[in-house]
Amino acid sequence: MSVAKISEISASSSKGFSAAVEKGIKRAGNTLQNITGAWVKEQKVDVKDGEITAYRVTMKVTFVLKD
Image (cartoon, rainbow, N blue to C red; front, side):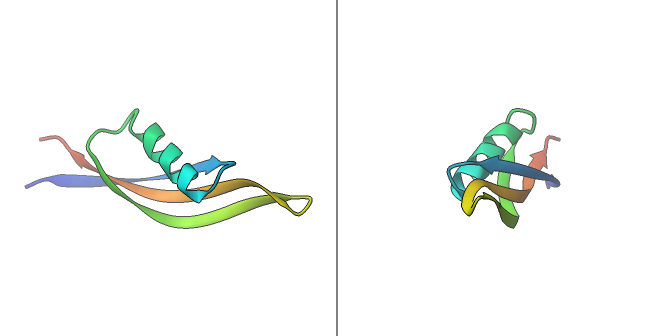
C-alpha cells in the first residue's frame, strides 16, 4: 500500500500553457520525489496593451511518499 500527497503549485511561461505546465513539473521535481501526475486546476493569462504577456497555471501535483 502506498500513500500519496498533493501539493498545489503555480507556474508561468511566456510561450503557452503547456510550457507553463512543463516548467512547473520540472521545478517541482527538484524538491518532490515520485511525482505521479498533476491536475491543472486553473489557467490564466496576463495581458498588456491587448497582447498576452504570460500564461499562468495552478496545478495540484501528486507524489507518492516513500515507505
